[in-house]
Image (spheres, rainbow, N blue to C red):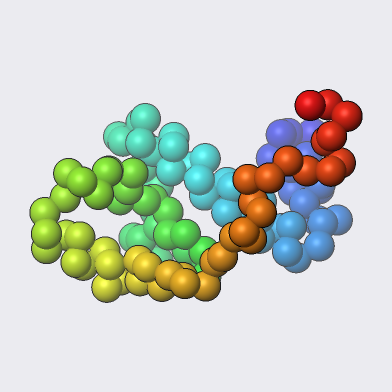
Length: 110
């Protein structure tokens, strides 16, 4: 039995949500491999495009995905803020007034 058939056999018994997670992970691994071996890239044969699932991260991620925002131009920052809605949770997350106070449960350890 080959590794591919063993993997497929294991996946057949998983629920659909887990199958989707496995697919996303394999897309991530394929992206990592393509990044390390650009001469061996593989695309969707019909569209010549990478395969995506709606509602997930689009892999491969842009090359500057983890680039610090401080190093971007004003136009790039505005584009990202408009696209992703930075600050959209402002005022919606609060902390209790006693956040920094010691916890009763940890009293014995202090």
